[in-house]
Image 1: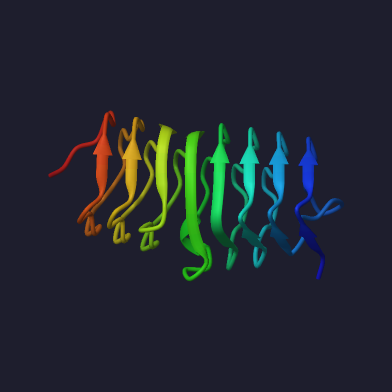
Image 2: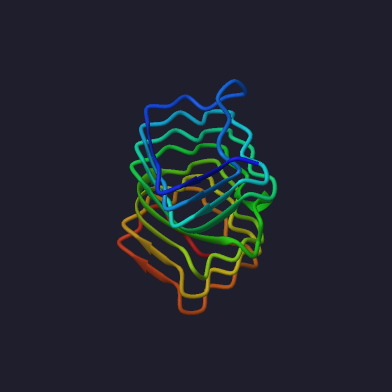
Length: 160
């Protein structure tokens, strides 16, 4: 098991030959490429991702606690495969289109700017979650708990 504490990764292409550390605490990832990377079982605590691409990465059992995403791309990601007890993200100006937060506890999360088009939030707990200035065309919220959720200046969101 490899650990990284308070380390900065800049323009790293993570793959089988350059694996992501199993546990990262206080780390910053700048313009890193995680495309199709296997982050299964990895733990990220108090980390920041800036300008990274996480599209189609695998997250089975991954933990994201107090993690911030800024200007990132993570298209087609199954966030619902993450560790449910270790999940809290703040997403700023990022593209998370075509993903799935099905059944995820988003009560410690927020989305500020960017896009979650065609993303599945079915059955999620979004109590108190903030969606501010987010493009939500085609996003699904069937059976989602939305008590106390904030939807401010979102576009493309409809309720049946």
